[in-house]
Length: 615
Ligand code: ADP
Ligand code: MG
Image 1 (cartoon, rainbow, N blue to C red):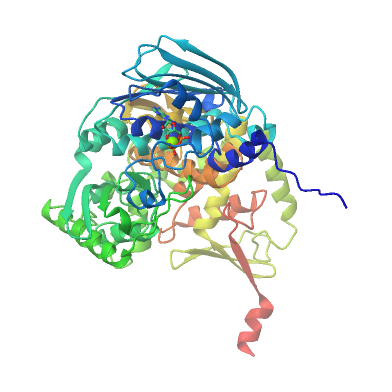
Image 2: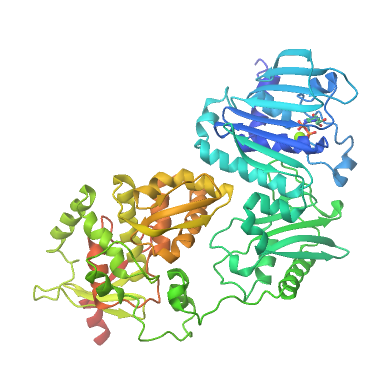
């Protein structure tokens, strides 16, 4: 039999290997930025078009390359950064594998201009799919400019796999943050589709953080500083009151590289114990310096996980250092359970009941007392107090039954009336309800006892309401008497713009979404005025998370996020009217039995089950 094993041609081998290094435009950004830093650049420009699918360009003023080096740089395993295996244990540079440029050149159209200080003229190389198309001598500034165009032009399957421009831009922005945060001394400029997103002057760490995440961040930072034999720690944690519902501003850097470490994250969370609620994430920007030989190098180019030799000690040091900083800067617990709920957002109000049952709650306080008040004003669209009225939740729903999608739902429920589901006490009247442990709404049905999980049921109701509104664009909006000004950082603005249309559909109105300060002029009826900031913050955070782990539609992600954040919680008292409304509206849903998060919303305990208890 003839020999059948053949060596793959270089360009094919390169293409395969490239898949490892380059997963999306953000990977190119990371590699090019790191090369520029390794080259000692003082000013770095990042230029992006169409989420990096059309163009990723990095321009630096670093050392540049000679003509030969320029050509060599595209060869696999060509690197100027290490020369022996021993060097691997004392890495001072970001790159060392000599693979990035070769990989990128295998799957894109690359244009490189470069000149060293000692050369009077520079080199221009064009390379497409690993083939050098042209190389010429040109006049160019000192430093290097690399343009990567039409990523994955020769691997359509990979190109099709890329997400929307905005999602890709977000990944790019994440990489940009990670690099810019460790190199505050380097000046960065970031342009997207011709407009500048970031202009970061050379600065100190703290200013760099504020330049990236908005000036409001500055006042939130608590410095952290410690030096031991094992590790040198510097950086900042965010004050506990700014802890967020979702991950976002959590950054660990070890020896100048962004790393992910669930274990060390836990150490930070442990330091915040007692200062923030357990479902919140503290923000942090922590820079660790350890002996390079005590840290496992990133063997895989895209991995950010690392292994430290002495993780347990590191954990202990980190936790106590942060604890100390929080104490020293007089960051007292900020969860004030006594304060006036009218000044509070409905979330924290609700959580009080849910997570801290021992807290004394004003028994006479009725969260739904507005109902009548608002009725008197003829169901006006302007909500005065901060307390969310249950009624408000239904105003939208009642009216939305006019919407096609909803009227059909209602018909479905009517046909259900003869079935076993619709609450009925046998006399043809609707059964009464009662609330059990501020968690369940109990009623009777023909076949037995109906127990509804109030939080999940309301999530289902709101989910279908918002999903309908986002697609049918009929959300009711309450105009704000005084537009509310909220500040967002650039990245939050990117997300806001991405979901703007859906938000407008459900009743949000914005005056402008370009500047850090956004004017909100209208909100959906279900959102209390005092909670607008919180709702939008969570929406942005949850939405960012939701999209990264699933491929569901934007409408669905948003409807889920909104329902999760606005549904009544366990621990909330519901008056009779609200309980009945919950019941009615749940069974008017298309899929009443499951919450949007696939949890059971209700159960029926049959008469037989009850009989058995008595036998
Ligand atoms: P690595 O960074 O792992 O060495 P790369 O493929 O990213 O591998 O780059 C190959 C080589 O090209 C580098 O070692 C460096 O010598 C050179 N190089 C790449 N980018 C630049 C740049 N912006 N300025 C100067 N030299 C560069
Ligand atoms: Mg490199």
